[in-house]
Structures are given as C-alpha cells and as structure tokens.
Image 1 (cartoon, rainbow, N blue to C red):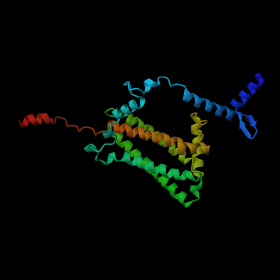
Image 2: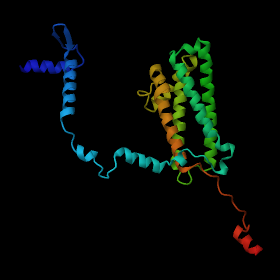
Image 3: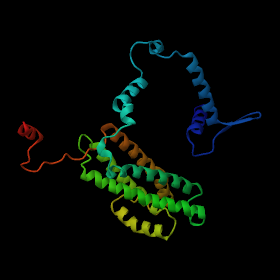
Image 4: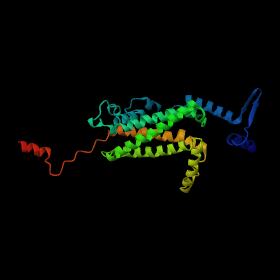
Length: 276
C-alpha cells in the first residue's frame, strides 16, 4: 500500500519521467491531469458553499474605504488631472531647449515601431528583403536621432540644474534611462547578424568577462542578446520613460536660473525708494 501510494505521488510530482496514465474504457488520462481536474472541482464547490470570512462587514457601508478607493485617492493627490495633463505651461517653456525631451520620446516610439516590424520575420530577413532594409534603416536612424536628442536634452538639463526644487528623481530616472539605452544599443549592435556584430561581440566579451558578468551576459550568444535587445531592455527603458514623465508632471519642468544682478546694482525696492 505504501509503495503504491509513493508511486502515485511520484507520478504526480516528478515531471522528469513519463506520466502514469489511467484507462477507463474509452477514457485515457494522465494521473497529474486527473489530480488537477479533481482539485478544480473541489475548489469550485468549496468556493460556492463555504461562507466568506467577514463577508457581511465587507459589503456594508462601514466607512472604511476599499483599497481601490485608497489607490484612487493617492493617485489623484499625487497627480491631479490638471497637473497630469495641463493645458497651460509657464512662459519660459517657449524655448528650444525644452523641446528635445519630447523629440527623444518621439524617436523612441519610432524605434519601437520599426523594431517590431524587424522582429516579425526573424533575425536575418532585413539583409535580403528590400522591405527589411527599409525598416532596418529606419530603425538605425531613429536610434541615432534618439541618442542625438537625448544627449542634447541631458546637456540642457545639466546646465539648467534640473535637480533643483525637489526634482532629484527627475535627474536620477533620466540618468538611469540613459544607461539602459546604452545597453540596449549595444545589444542591438551585436544582433545585426553580420561581420560588424561578430567583431563587436568578440571585442566586448573580454571586457565583460574581466568584470565578472560574462557568465550572465554572454555577448557571443545571439539568442540571449536578441532577447535582451527586443524585450528585456525595451521594457526597462519604457518603464523609466513613464516614471520620468510622471515625475516631470508632478514637479513641473525646471525653471531657468534666476537672473543675477550686477554687483552694486540697486534692487527694485531701492529704485522705487529713489523715485519717491
């Protein structure tokens, strides 16, 4: 009896060997599937007949807000609609230096769209198809513009002190976004499936092995690099973009530095007193 029970338990738990099948006339089903179906029926019946703990109190208007209401209140407090989607901006935003952040996001959208098209037909078709060459070129130049706009945006915010006024997270998320973008661009280079990508991967492996991450980030493994490039790093970049934009909406765009008065120049109050 004990041996039979152990054999049945092993057939359910051990998935490294062929499953044990049960035959009932025309019905043939594996033991793991039978156990799952029986458990589903049992849980279904229990969900109907077992009373929910505290169900009456949960349905009554006792004044305690549900978690969905608490999340909604917190979201509205942190991001009021007029602040999340404003219809007015300060006058100092009418400057070209404030445009490059939006251009960076626009080029990122083109990168994603062209990259999706490139990934549909496999990792090599863009070398042999005219349509693939077109989208490959679009992907390349959108990446070039992405870094072009992002670096100018970074320069502008550095010299404007974008961390001022409680905007430290704006600067931190932007810096992390920049680093993640470099990694994504690198994995794109080694995923080209040409001699350039082979040379870049061969040169990079020694440096990555020297810092101890070669076993986890193998640049000679095309499948690993391709998935980093088309899935993992784009998700990270997209998350940082969303957080960055939300933080900017919460604290507003950074204003220019206040004008510095020349040494010895009278203030506005002193000029008013002089006129009087």
